[in-house]
Amino acid sequence: MKFSIITPVYNGEKYIAETIESILSQEGDFEIEYIIMDGASTDKTIEIIKSYEERLNTGWYKIRCKKITLKWYSQKDSGMYAAINKGFSLATGDTYAWLNSDDTYAPNALDHVAKTFTTFPDIKWLTGTNILIDESSRVLKTNPCYLYNQEWIRLGIYGRNAYFIHQESVFWRSELWNTSGGIDEKFKLVGDYYLWTEFSKHTPLWSLNTPLGCFRKRKNQLSEDTDGYRKEQLVAISTPQNFLTLRIRIFFWLKSKLPTFFEQPLHLLYRILFPARNRYYINIEKNVGPTKKVARSFVA
Image (spheres, rainbow, N blue to C red):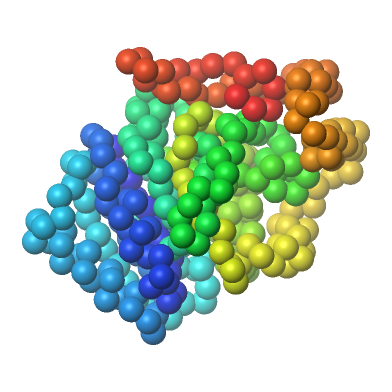
């Protein structure tokens, strides 16, 4: 298996080294094609990238997978999503992902993904549990293994009425990207949200019950613009107002308000309200590998 991972960056000197390290240190039976798309940074970003390029080329950096190819391009672009689209147009791998320049991968993330895709050829798209870190890389929270319904993704439910699909923990096969046509570059904030709705038109999203990505919470990041995000969501997709979406809104509103004491009743309520929803996920079994399991409700 060959991963093609894109990192868009502009003046990312503070965290780019940590992002690069989290990719180059991945261990397993796979290749990595790492493509960094720089938007003509004016700080030390390019200097940092070049230092890793030199260490890889001279053999100083000891890799733990079959092969790593680092490519980087620096030029002005029209935004992050344009850079990501350009990066994937240069990609040659069979498994795609992008990692922003302040986020990181969890140890063994790529190995878990590679084994899952190899074990289950029918799975075209997967996500894992997500870790929230602070500006000093301290763990703030580890999210549970949420499950995602294909129809609900297409309707734009996740990230609007329910929990998010965390981009830094998502991987997909290259043919899914080619079929979907990439990210609409008119968006500035919800490119991933839009892409997930496009992916869901073709195949379900599987959840892997292990940490894959770490999202860094910091000041002055794009995700702080919640008003702008909501406005772009309305442009990306218009969620229909019907009995299904009403039930979804009420259920997840209750989930956000009730204390953890009500966790078990909530799972029962979910099964009553949405009895036909797919509840399968992937678990990493010791000495066995990836195995399909059935969850109790919306979480593994």
